[in-house]
Length: 447
Image 1 (cartoon, one colour):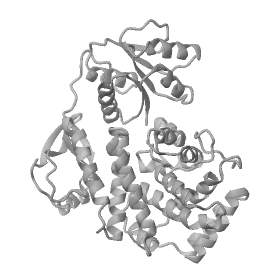
Image 2 (cartoon, one colour):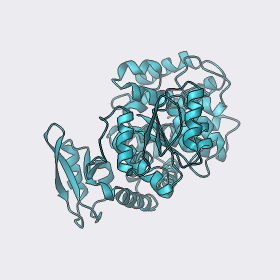
Image 3 (cartoon, one colour):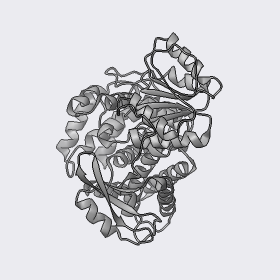
Image 4 (spheres, rainbow, N blue to C red):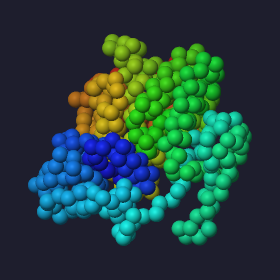
């Protein structure tokens, strides 16, 4: 996934450009309001695919272009407005142009389209994952819903399937899903309102006291997918923060259930959970079990572990990318260079996203950044460092175990566990890594 830095002081225009960039380009957009804030990101992220900057933002255009030129960087820079600069990788757009035209030029700079002669005509519809509809049965969603039918190359027809004001059942949605449909389409102008509507509905459902164990797992898994979609499409706003808080509270409620582990494994084996949530929840569950073996166990530490388990892969939208935990895993995945770069940087990117959530401690941010063994949050080091925090080392071992466990088809056997621990025992031989592995082995043997 491409990564774009947007420097725009106008909050309305900033949100519009970000939303449409993420929809059109499927990129991660980092928002900054000033040149100084932008430079702090540019200095630690050498792999930005594009910087978009409004020249009226306190001479941000001159400041950023001067820095890039001085540092001999080749990062494409798109400036809205007039700027005086000799930077070779600079593109300018007149400030009188529409935001649609800015998006089209950005796509051209990223190598995704030919340069447009004028403001482009964009599709009036945007794709929405079918999982958004799984918990909306018998609800008036307030907008028409379409499926897209391909008529010829680059020519599509949008056919209305759900009418605004209609009620539908989860059985109707299940039939579409079983037929292979992965997404519906809704009018572009209604995307923000629709996602906010779904978010509000999920928040209400997650807070219900009547949820059964299996219902809670499935609902929280769906909410987790919506959370990731919100972050990658609408950004981190009040709705996103509230949904995250309710999702984490729901995760905590599941942890307190008497038969939580067996219920989770039952749902996991029935393939009703997304990989992303199953991986996060199981990490959280095991961490809570084994931390009791350590002297520094406390409610605060358990709360930290819950948040790290929830957030560690939040910058990755595709579950295929979440399955990559070591450099050798790239050999088994047919992914683009852009996605490979995103995976290598995802620990850092996730920690940057976390900084935009309120009430998130620096400890949580640090552990998320270190959760693949690198203090910088970049890459998958072969050699284990003992300079990481103890909780980071604990998380690394548990995540490795969970990643291996989830690969097992069906119910895990004793032989499956022997193979997993054989892999882990060769890698984790010192410090907190070894202590975690010992506690993990004892916990698995007991359960």
